[in-house]
Amino acid sequence: MSTENHRMVASRSTAVALDAGPTAQVLAAGVLPWRATGQGLEVLLIHRPHYDDWSWPKGKLDDGETLPECARREVLEEIGLEVELGLPLPITRYTIGNGKKTTKEVWYWAAEAGRVTPVPDGQEVDRTQWVTAEAARGLLTNATDAEPLEALIAAHRNQTLRTAPFIILRHAKAKPRSSWSRAEGQRPLAATGRRQAVAVRRLLAVWDPQKVITSPWLRCVETVTPYVKDTKRVFKEVSAFTEKSAKNKPQKARQEMARLLGKQRSTLLCTHRPVLPLLLEVLAQNIAPAVLAALPEKDPFLSPGALIVAHQALDLGGKIVSVETYDVWDD
Image (tube, rainbow, N blue to C red):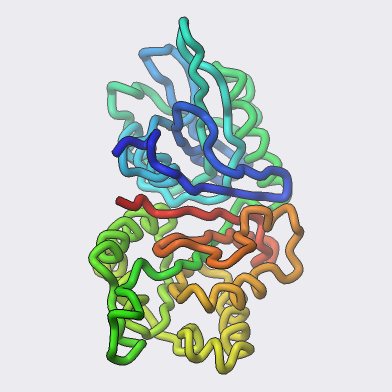
């Protein structure tokens, strides 16, 4: 299956922009690596010998890949950096080709990268340099590359650049209720759901959540298992996020959600479709409508295996400054 034929669900919102989904014929993704030093905000530029230009790490999607996965992979392949994606930055759009015009979009994210040393691959990229954000304005070759830079500078100025992801994940596809006669909490993933859980593992690596919380029901535990096995992290089961508990004691689910948000740390929470409205209600409290524009509004809110990423600004007391929603690649 090609990327072009796949219904890609991807939306992002911040206080100043809404990206409702891909629209171009060619999709790519990239990153603006940044660090804070005694000189202020610095960014990492790359030099591409084939084009003889200074730009950002980026590249086209592979088949079976989401936009965030593409961005992270391109940084690793081109300059050897393993980054975690942060605040969404503006998409650049332009046409390519000399004959029939083809539209192209590049989806960008910020990524803090202050403690690592870039290693150019020697083919796509032959040089890199850390420069101040102001100096980068004059060094970028292509005018379109300036838009995500200006957004990065504004986020640094507004203290919204340094963030922690709070990820809400709906468990992957489970066996049908109609074919399950045993305890509801023991209903497992279907074969499709097990494949989705592997795709979820790959997508979660983009943000690498440190704390993993899940409903103790089996289909949720099985959804996060590939990720926790890969990362060798432990997970915590919280009964307030089961379907039964949330139905009988909805306020407890709200309170647990608020408590987790209050910790302002990189977190994954896996739960069930009927619980999602309670969690989204807490998420939406006291947040500007523009920031929440990418938040699903209607049941079922998320498809099986899909997720929401809410970025909490660590320099603003955990205020939510952007929201992203993605489906995993589904066969």
